[in-house]
Structure formats: C-alpha cells, structure tokens
Length: 206
Figure 1 (tube, rainbow, N blue to C red):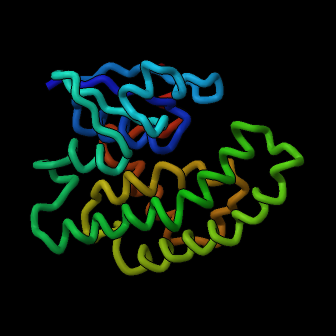
Figure 2 (figure 1 turned 90 degrees about the vertical axis):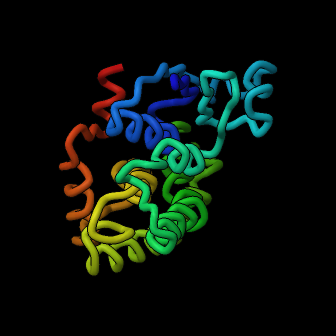
C-alpha cells in the first residue's frame, strides 16, 4: 500500500507520522501544507478533512485517515511498535490520550505561539499561562520514566513517538528540561533507535 501524507514537518503531530513511516521503512509521498497561508482552509483540503487540520494520511484507494494518533495506530498495527496484548496496547493508548489532553494543549500551543507566531504581545499572557500545565505534564512523564525505560514499558512503542514529538522541541515553547533527568534519559533512548531522526534532521533533509 502506498501513502500520501499532507503535513508540516515542523508540526509535532505531522512529524510523528513521518518518524514512524521512516522507522518502519514505509514508502510515502510527503505533501507540504502551510497552515499559516491558509492551505488547510481550501475547498480541496476540507474535502479530505472537514476539520481543517493536519496531518492527513491518504490511502492508495483515495480514502483518508485523520488525527495523528489514530494514524500512528493504523500504521503501527502488526509491528513491534504496537503491542498485541490487550492491556499492553491499552497502556499505549493511555499515554496517547495523555499526550492529546494533558501535554499537547500546553507544550505544543506555547511552542506555536512562540515559534510560529513570534510571541506577539497579544498572546503573551496565554503563552505564559501554558507553562504551568506543560511542566505538570513533563513531571508526570518524568515520574513514569524513572520507573520504566519507555513510557509503556520495557520497549519503545508509538506512545513514545507520540510524546517524543513535541517534548524534544519543548524548549521552543519555553520549557527547560534540566529538572527532568529521567525524561532526558528517555529522549536519548528514543534518539538511539536505529533510523531515528529528529524534527530538525528531517526538515533539513526535505
């Protein structure tokens, strides 16, 4: 099966898809989308995803799949990145729900305001308000990672890919990771996986 991915490599939600595709050595066509230029609001894009968000995974039959973690689960099915045992798989999903509800709304939003928008004065208060929730999420991760090598256990899974995406660029949202030793060890462990590339490495190669 061949895939086309509509996304922005500087978006953590899009990067996580490309990272898994790379680690699984799955051929795909990457279609860049500029959200600031309104490319997710065109009639053609909204026909694929009425929610007007990236990433979008287009299948070879023309069907599409949206929402980054749903795409990860689809692509990882049958691989070592997604356990088959029900409880182990549920633990992966647990961390993916955490990423979307307790991590991304703070860390990714602060990064977007700073990196994409240039920290405008009218959004500075919002940016600063995101710091508390972001650090809470980082502490939760650090606590878990002081007990296990990876978020869902002994081996890396798509739970790690989901949370690595925005965590490894959290400094771009003003988050200092120096106080999270277990998390820093985990970042290095994820980056040691054969075939891994950071967001910056992928962006430079495109």
